[in-house]
Structure formats: structure tokens, C-alpha cells
Amino acid sequence: DADVTQTPRNRITKTGKRIMLECSQTKGHDRMYWYRQDPGLGLRLIYYSFDVKDINKGEISDGYSVSRQAQAKFSLSLESAIPNQTALYFCATSPGTGGITDTQYFGPGTRLTVL
Amino acid sequence: GDSVTQMEGPVTLSEEAFLTINCTYTATGYPSLFWYVQYPGEGLQLLLKATKADDKGSNKGFEATYRKETTSFHLEKGSVQVSDSAVYFCALTHYQLIWGAGTKLIIKP
Image 1 (cartoon, helix red, strand yellow):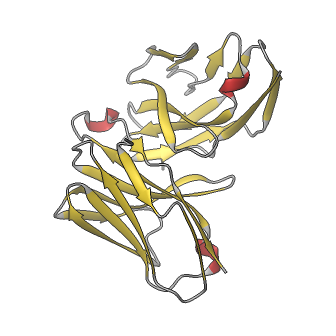
Image 2 (cartoon, rainbow over the protein chains, first blue to last red):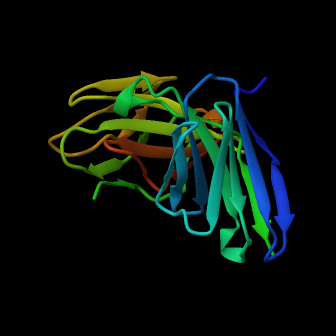
Image 3 (cartoon, helix red, strand yellow):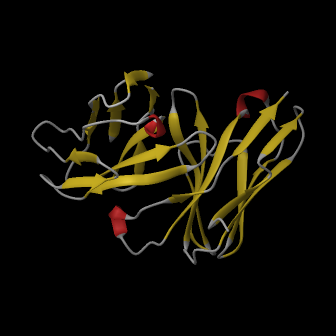
């Protein structure tokens, strides 16, 4: 079984709809991250959480919110989806033990299309 | 601020060719450097990393050396295979993980 899972894997929605992307991990890691990937732009950090009570904005948090329901679960919400939020979204985890050398472990991604 | 610049792709090579994907960075102090790989339809996974100057990271036949004097961390492989076709991301971590834009590699049989 995959260590980091994301649901759904693909989603098509309409402008103005509320969308939730879910991430679960069985790695026992404290740190979790949400990224979006756009062609030619690499990955950009949306939000990150170092533990259940610690949530921080990343580079591009506007239009997004998150919830860390448990150590193993980290959800990303788009309150009112817009077309320029069409992208590939990745969840990642890291153990937090390596400091700045921490390796991140990625889920398979969710492809979101906003019409 | 900190940044990572990678060569633009796609890079197209024949099987068994020598591979270099350039990566340069801008950062104060001593960041750690990473190469991640994304195979088609999958998430990213760590390929190799180096945590201090002159360190060489290696994995699956790929190598990269942390060159502080040239602020570079170029990825190399002596003989590529079709299965190496993927998108390769260079990244650095200092206070947070900073990603390059990715380089798509296509290997033809």
C-alpha cells in the first residue's frame, strides 16, 4: 500500500464550487505539505503543517485553506474554485528529524480542472 | 531570495547516451541540495541529495556534486535508459524547500 495517498486522483468541477482534496499518510510523519504544480513553474508551496496544531501559509495560499484533522490527515480546500486553480496538486510528508535536510515523500497527485 | 535555475527541457537523448542536466542556485549560507524525479503519472521521489560543499550524491547510476564555488548541482548519468524518461527537479532547502521548474527528459530507444 502507498505511504501517502490522495483522493480524489482526478476531479473536474465548475467555477464557484467548493472542493476538498484529501491526503492521508501511514509514514508516521509530523510534517505535511500541499503543493501545486503548473507546467514550467515547478512546485509551489500552498500550506504546510509541522504538527496538528501548527499550520503555516506557503508561497501561494490565497484562495486555499487547510485542515489538519490528525497527524495522518491533511486536507486542502478551495472555497470557491476558479479556472486558474486548474493544476496538479501534491501532498507530501517529511519526518522533521533531518532539519533542513529532511526528505519529502510525495503522494501520487490530484489533477484538478476548474471549468 | 533563494532560487533554483534548471536547464529548460525537454532534453531528448538516445539510449546509452551521457546525460547532464544543469542546475544552479542562489542562496546565502550553506543550503542542502536535492534532485527529485517524477515518473509519468506518479508523484515526486527523492533521487539523491548533498548536504555540504563537495559532497557527491548518487543513486541508480545518477550523480551530482555540490559545487559551492560555481553554485551548481548538475545531474549526470553515464548511460541513460528508456526507463529514465521522467521529469527531474532540482531543489534546495535552507529555511524552506525551493524548487526549480523541472526538466523533462525523453530517452529514445
